[in-house]
Length: 203
Image 1 (cartoon, rainbow, N blue to C red):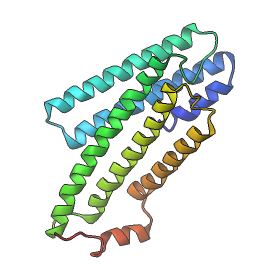
Image 2: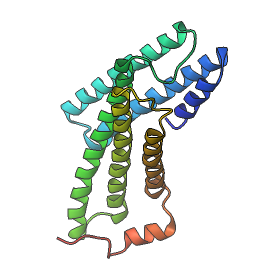
Image 3: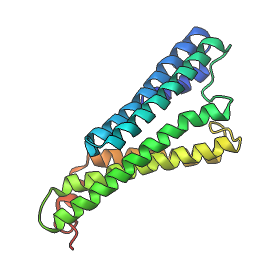
């Protein structure tokens, strides 16, 4: 997804065949990235649950339909567009993303709660516990940003041109970036603080 969105913006500013190629690569990358989110969430949190497999299948199917529509648009329309003119098509892109990140956030908060109770009993790893919390917050930030864009689309607002929508999206994006660094590349001082007994909750 981090590769796909910049390419999508580049496609919007390019022309001719270059624009189409950039657009095709970007939509494949973005929808593929969100598909892996569903697979990751099921594999990590609910590997044996039938409802999780069904939810993952629905998410993948919806993303596949969205990808097919966008590729058809790229092949048939005179110019490529980042956002579809049809509200329904745009919501078809946003819907599975919002659902996927809400699911991932809920699961992470649930496991964070379990890890807190284990830490209070002297079990578990405080860094891993904190990582569950950070991933939950990351997913929640993405969900909030996606929801803002969904509301803007329904109201007919240009999500790529309205300064308030761009500011809100940028804020949630910056939040995600900071939390991702803390989760996967934490500074030494942060790891030391997380590992300290002061951070571990008590019952």
